Length: 126
Image (cartoon, rainbow, N blue to C red; front, side, top):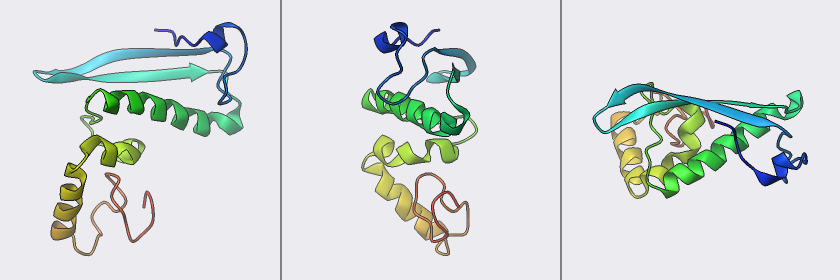
């Protein structure tokens, strides 16, 4: 699959400093009765110093679409730090319940601190 953005095809960088040329690939893994895990790989000619920013912007854009359309952001290895910023929006009112359950089971906040998008007394992504 090739990422299609008109400004890329005209040879200009996007408003967010995106790459002139970008490509992506995907494959399905782990099929279930209610869905499947899809792995994505992204590639672009991004300056080394801007790669982290570009990669996060790509994840933000993709997850915005997924959440808007009710897709799950889960993964068979868990949510992880990469998906944590989207948990509250993805779970909606259920996020508060998750926070309460975590607090009840782990009042000291020592089990997987900073994961699942939950606050941590040890700091973000602890």
